[in-house]
Image (cartoon, rainbow, N blue to C red; front, side, top):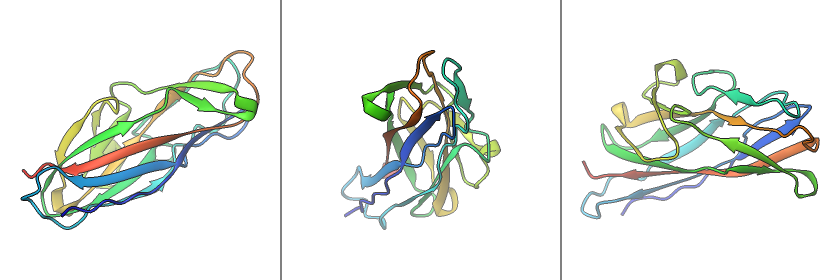
Length: 170
């Protein structure tokens, strides 16, 4: 049977201060029960870092930014095909229940066989993505955009992101 693993990180933003995405939830599984590879191992390596976020000023982090993009590693079997899906928030929660919108677009995630976001194939984290673990490993990069309101409450904001990785059996 396939393995399931979990690592937890959080999207965080700090209005008028530092902002980061240090929390991911990750899981892995096997889609085809006749295909019995070793478990997938998923590890969060770097949080998305929005740095300073100012009320009323949108802030984006590109998935190709090696210093600010979120980075996850996937280790599995040979050149096995995997499917990735994300559950991403539409709001970050802050002090006193304050909310800050966050959006993810068609090129805000990337998949590469090396830990270099500039080499990643871009994809939309709002839909599934299928690729191969070339050499039994891959890296996933994540960016996004926070949309703080003009009167946004200052403080730390966060929300979970879940990435699920499943062997397809191909």
